[in-house]
Length: 513
Ligand code: KIV
Ligand code: ZN
Image (cartoon, rainbow, N blue to C red):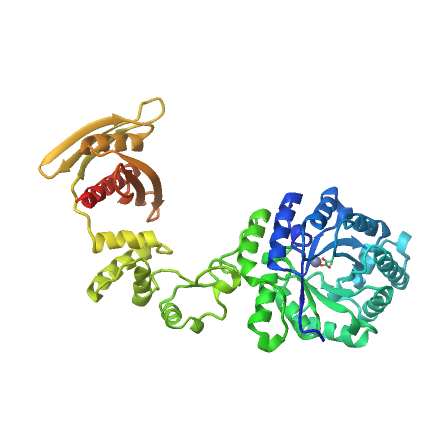
């Protein structure tokens, strides 16, 4: 049996069926180009009979996308298949994916008596004929025809096997065995694939495809069980998007096959370094953000936080990582600094920021770090820079805010009056502005005699409640010299803003020497 598994991406068809999602043709094309860079084997581009947009998307992908086979979905209905044929006309390598429901629940629930017969047996006989006719008809458009036996996961085996044998004889070269409702468990789904391969005449000559849904969170596990039992195509979507709880996440399937090659003994053609980019592109286009803890491509997938883990990873990455973030295009592992991060993790991050500290300096910084980490979920590099500034390189306070008075509100001109001490001298100035903060900044510039350009302003709460401390960070560009950041904290955000501005000015004065 071949030792390669084909990856069939249905993000643009089954994935797009996720509630609340719709991709236009341009978005489908952009994603398809990225899927081609990812090197998926097949892209299912849409269901042409379902809407003019789907027809157009399949048509556009056929003209623009090189590399992967472009596939169109249809029911086992001749008119649907004609629409697929027309949409795929311009394609070099194309596939028609046709099929129908085979479980007793589908047979009795979806196919009405008038057209398909009254009894289960009548309906099944009719459906078998339709399946065979659909495949034969599709073969008139392309040699590459895949048949899906919808709801195989819950189907009666005898009928499923009969249909599969019929469509193999009619020329289907890929048999898709969908667990449409995500009902199967790995042992059972794997056994189903094995039985099909060994019991359905001709099944060992065609490709068996796993198509698993995630209703019980087992789509990836079921797909992998299928591979272990002889499936050589896996269908899935990027980020696992899709109907209800979604489809098998391609990035998880591929990285499991790769990381545990010792178990699966198969390869794919996927260029895994493109996973991260593809994931973000799909998330953005579908307006479905990736949860941080999502396997393989979540923002925390390679983030380490607890002291023991950080220490281990910094000594030897493999202690707590089974893959490298670089393998999936995510750059480096991330050490997330939290209250649980030990000395070693903090020291390592400070060194990366260019700070080499003595043991006693590190102790001092660590104590401040713990205070900040207690208030915040994550301590960022800018926080460390601020801590370093305060603890190790404090800036002389050339100017100190003695008082600040502002006036604002609807129908008034915002004004501010400041008193600033510079050694023995006290400067007092007033100014107007676009708002009280702008007015305060103008008054401070007049009082200190330093004019700068404000190129960044950020405010955030550093404690909870209505009396929360606000912390303001500003970026100031002096006329000469490099830009500086200033910080100030207060329960009054205008005061915090003024303090941040003065902190920045003090820094500029210190750098001038
Ligand atoms: O889940 C399913 O059964 C499907 C088929 C239409 C292939 O998506
Ligand atoms: Zn599906």
